Length: 399
Ligand SMILES: Cc1cc2nc3c(=O)[nH]c(=O)nc-3n(C[C@H](O)[C@H](O)[C@H](O)COP(=O)(O)OP(=O)(O)OC[C@H]3O[C@@H](n4cnc5c(N)ncnc54)[C@H](O)[C@@H]3O)c2cc1C
Image 1 (spheres, rainbow, N blue to C red):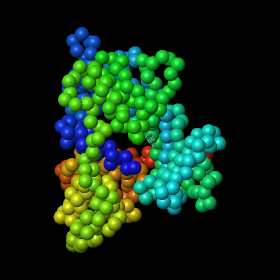
Image 2 (image 1 turned 90 degrees about the vertical axis):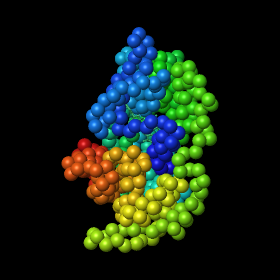
Image 3 (image 1 turned 135 degrees about the vertical axis):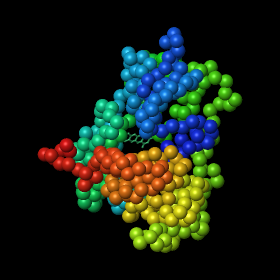
Image 4 (image 1 turned 180 degrees about the vertical axis):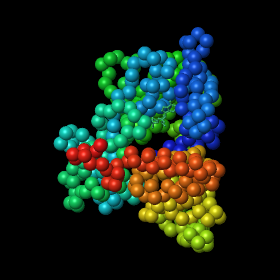
């Protein structure tokens, strides 16, 4: 699954259904009614401009993942914590580490942790789960965690498993949750928890990507109850198609391959046609569904048909499309949150950056100074990914 596409698809589906969607916007405090008894709104900072504003609602849903306790403490500074943060480290290896359509799971490694390996987006993803951690905005994987994964899979493969093959490595924080209103004997849950421990503030956390629709339904039902809302119908998530999904078929990519050309500008300024090969057509179709034709049209009509990174199907046209239609507001948005290039191969993402920034600058009218800032921020962001080139060894440990 390409979870960055699913995530942005959900936001766009909500926008089409009438939601006001804001990214790079951070809740900095919660607003209470005059009696201080109920949450009635939030103060929000637009992190792109630094401007702050207030917004009001009958109910606020706190779905801020590992950060949900920080939000709850804005309502009640003594709120009992409900998140037990747990870090998961993932690494990317070349495709030949995993046969197509086949994965591997080691349910109990030497120290009892699970390790898995799966084909993912043309490469191999391997990872482990569950080390206690603290909550930070950009967690980094430790060298010993990467080595642990390599050691665990090497027992089951008949190829040489090498640190130098690691194309990207990152760490994420899982929000494992305890219900603050439950009896104290309840243990940490991998299921989700919904609670309203301050009137007007419904918190939904825990759970998994794979259960997001059931999480959404429970959160919506809790919000209806809290706000005494009278909706025309119940939660519709169960049957809701995500934007680009209606009418999409596995064979939809053939239309792109047959009907579109990738027009490419050469360094000398000449424009030359290129074929919409199966890899590019399949990628666009899987990433954008039926909207892929719009991306292909940009590649053809605006001479944005070149690949952004050698060996990857991402096209220049996607940067323009994402800036125009998917709230892509920064270079990091594109390499990490609209595509998964940073996660697939850190160096390829780094090489693609100048062109990504050039196209975004054209779309958003960025001046030179903004472009320089974008390059710096994205370069710093990529340093948190520990590909073999980014690895720093000190006495065998990542520093
Ligand atoms: C390494 C790893 C591997 C995983 N693998 C799987 C898997 O294979 N299958 C699966 O189903 N699940 C998997 N998960 C779990 C899944 O990713 C999480 O359950 C899911 O991301 C949680 O979603 P969420 O929306 O609750 O929180 P998040 O995805 O963390 O989203 C919370 C959002 O809130 C925002 N936010 C935080 N504070 C504020 C604030 N003050 N104001 C505004 N916004 C704020 C954050 O920026 C973020 O965008 C994995 C998780 C990790 C870390």
